[in-house]
Image (cartoon, rainbow, N blue to C red; front, side, top):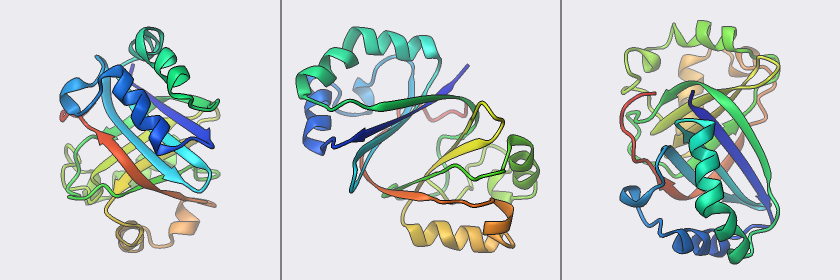
Length: 195
């Protein structure tokens, strides 16, 4: 089962992130570890935030044990908070041409049933989602049945334009959104097929 991995690294720097990738020999889509579907590393005022989609927990565990753990330590990356969610839905390649901003949101009171009902009505989610205006869209399932959404957009304005056009009242439909918008530092997207 595919999983979404969300890592918050308070105090982490892009230099540490880049050094860890260098130590692991990860330079582009052709050098990603086996089992990685999508990776984005972002920055905000607090540090680094990474969101990955993996084919399975076993693939992630293998990568951590054979490469990532040692590389993070050698690069001096500070302790991180790690959360893992089963993937509910992924659009690995939407119509968006730019991936400059990660939207990370955990809408209060918005569960997977509400998400499915909403997306059934949206043209952006028709078929394989290739006409979704985001460059990438993923939804993880939290233990309480609510969701976490990670999207890549060209800009925050693009997201809000989509929300205004497709959600009559985004705040009402998505609960108290509290979105986080993070600047993309690196993206690896080796898998083009939908999960």
